[in-house]
Image (cartoon, rainbow, N blue to C red):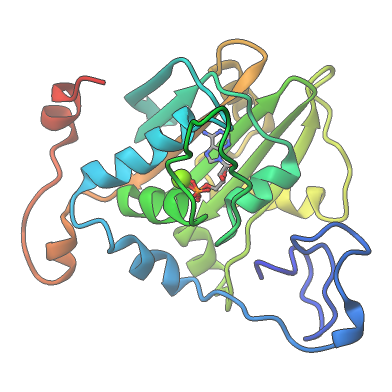
Length: 249
Ligand SMILES: Nc1ncnc2c1ncn2[C@@H]1O[C@H](COP(=O)(O)OP(=O)(O)O)[C@@H](O)[C@H]1O
Ligand SMILES: [Mg+2]
């Protein structure tokens, strides 16, 4: 469940939520709204074409709070699966920020030196990535921590989740050891069981694909090869090999 990461908690007893410990008014004891896994797909339908979805991920990297100078967009074969990757050299994220990124409606963006942020609704990453593929891993490093997070329709279907669950695992950037939190171990298990990486060493090697000490890599697989119309009964194919390399950024 998105707001109760880890083991299910009773309604109205928030733990491990988006707010930091102690800041949730526990006294309310009223249940939180949750997000159905099906919403991931329906929310992505706002992108009738893949280009606007690609733009969401690109905008995130160049937004003033991230300030990437370079963004690589590639189609790569990873673990024998065609993947779409976005790798930037921006400021990266803490595990908590990554949690907010994989949640809905949270954005910390502010106007810096008259530079206006592009994304402001806290939804672009979710709608864009889920338009491009069914499953996504986000690898990020910010100079002191590494974190990986999974947003995956396949995973949620397999475990018959009733609400969106986002496994997130933080590691020390210095020694690459897992930082133990209340849900880091089950999150790592979920990622190794349900993503394309079933070996921790292979998973960790993705951090090396981010050049430098800071940056973020978004890896999307089970790429959606049909248009939103096809979801509404059209046959149009997504031809990444033809269209992607015709884009000049
Ligand atoms: N490539 C990235 N590098 C660092 N932080 C990112 C990146 N992409 C997204 N984020 C963080 O995740 C948050 C949520 O992203 P998104 O869902 O696109 O919403 P929005 O862009 O409207 O804030 C952003 O506000 C930003 O803080
Ligand atoms: Mg955005």
